[in-house]
Image (cartoon, rainbow, N blue to C red; front, side):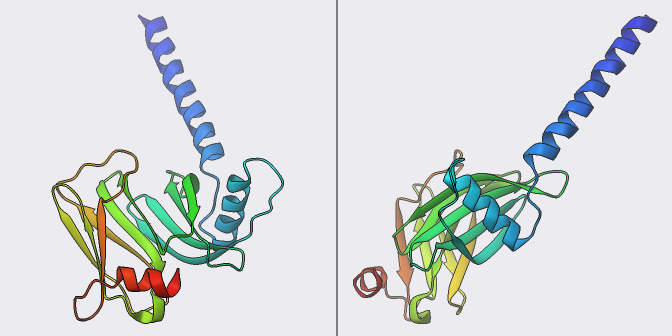
Length: 188
């Protein structure tokens, strides 16, 4: 009986040590903007020489997740990164993306629920609200009168997988008019 208890205790200790070491190596990015930018550049290069330079525009913490909005080099080409925080207070990169659309948006699942997020540039500060549409619900987000934004809305009825997209978005001005098409014509 004593051997079984010692064996069980040894297994628990080994598990804790292995888990701690794994967490230390997986979650190694400190909550420092320059370090986050550099980590995203290395991640995006996929082990090759780092050739893409990212410029941080905005970050937002949601539960155990950090959303990061960036521009690629000196262009208007946008990028996003999603990082999760480990028990050691450091981050690891879960995903990155980039594109030439006016906005970056997706859904995400954290330890506390499902969310839709949208990030982008508030062109001439014309955007007042953005609505995202899903099969079972609509989320409306107020956009701050700032040049860049990241806004998040918790989904109450829609349970998302890892990442998904709303099937439709509306970009509204102060009068409630959808200005998405105008933004594409003038800024894309």
